[in-house]
Image (tube, rainbow, N blue to C red; front, side, top):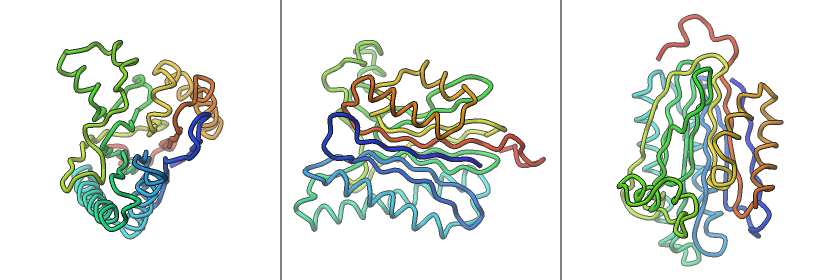
Length: 253
C-alpha cells in the first residue's frame, strides 16, 4: 500500500493548525488521519496535534481489524476517547478553552477502507468507476443545502461556509459518521482539510488523481493549486493507493 502526506500553511495564515499522519498497526494495516484544528491562539494546533498523536499511539497497538464492522467499532471507540481527552485538556488549560478539531480518518486494508469523520474535512475515492466524495460535511451551510434552503452553488460563496455543526472536542458526546468501501487494485483514497476542497474543484481533483503520476507529485500539485487559488487556509491531505496487484482473496470485503 502506497501513501503520501502533505501539509502547508497556505499564503495567509500565520500558523498551520492542521495535523496529518499515516500509521501502520501490527498487521501492517494503515490508519490515515487529517485533523483541522480550531480555537483561540494556537489552541487549534493543540487539538489537531493531540488527535493525531493519540490515534497514532492507539493504532500501533491495534490488530485483528479484519472486517469493516471491526474497523467501524475501532474508530468509533477510539475517536470517542480522543474526544474526552480534548475536552479534559480544554477544561484544565484556560489557554485552550473552546478548542476543537475536525477529523477524517480511514482504516485501510487490502480488502476495504472504513472512513470516519467529524466536521468538514473530507474523503474522496478515485477509481476506474470515477471520482466521488464519500463524506458529508457537518457544516451549517451543508445543512442548509440538505434542507433545500440554499443551492449547492449558493453554498460555495456563503458567508458562513466555515461554521461547523459538529466538531471533535467541543462536547461530551459527538457522533462519528462512518462509511466503508471495497478497495480494488490501484484505487486512490484522498483525505483532506477544507483548505484543499474549498480551493480545488472536483474536476481538478479527479484529473490529478487519475493522471497516473507519482503520489508525491500529485500531492505537491494539489497544494500548489490550492495556494494559486488564494491559499487563505491551511492545506493538508493524505493519499492512499491500493497495490496494483492484490493477492487472490484479499480484494473482497
